[in-house]
Length: 251
Ligand code: SF4
Image (cartoon, rainbow, N blue to C red; front, side):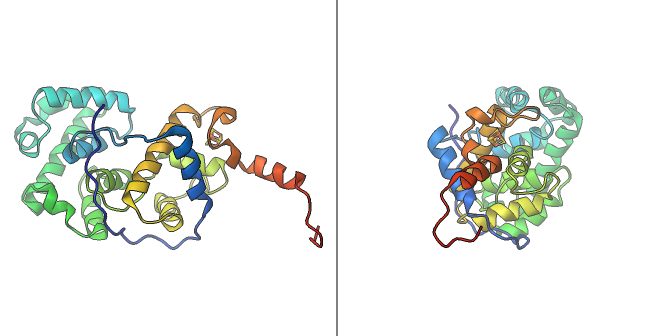
């Protein structure tokens, strides 16, 4: 089992103001007790997290695993190796991850950015304050919000919550956000509702991925077996309707 990348505590970047939803903490506790530790992100080093975060865009993790295995076998999972490898060869090695030519360019752009702005040092990069580093990462070709936040949280230990398609789906099915809610609004919802602890964000995102893969699928969700079933709004309403009404309570 691969080890998790090292995590350090950092303050989060600025996020839009939203009303906290304290029940999210209970979602976390229910998932954590039902599913246990997730060991997410599956990577051996912070640099490997970054490579994986770029390669996993628009594809399943199983396709990324093959690409990373190729890079490891060829000794290319270091900053300087990726700087020097021919881009076409790199593209061939990561073919299984899809959009491989674009992703080869994105990897090259990232290591160029790292060299130019931080002398090639991840340590230096991650010493940058969260909000500033997030902005600088988002300016790199091929790094969007989810990728930037995965890099910040899982490779750098910064306190930002990673939002993905599973997060959007689960929250909208539970009436906690709109299906088409903006990335930043969902991130803000989690960050306003939970203590700002990278270890908690790390684990919660892994648990959400697990629920999305195993129960909360795109088509028919498997709610009856899902650990989040007790939190479904329909059930909450049913319980409320059947509960005894306290003396003096208004109808
Ligand atoms: S209970 Fe149903 S809707 Fe809620 S997360 Fe589980 S599968 Fe999705």
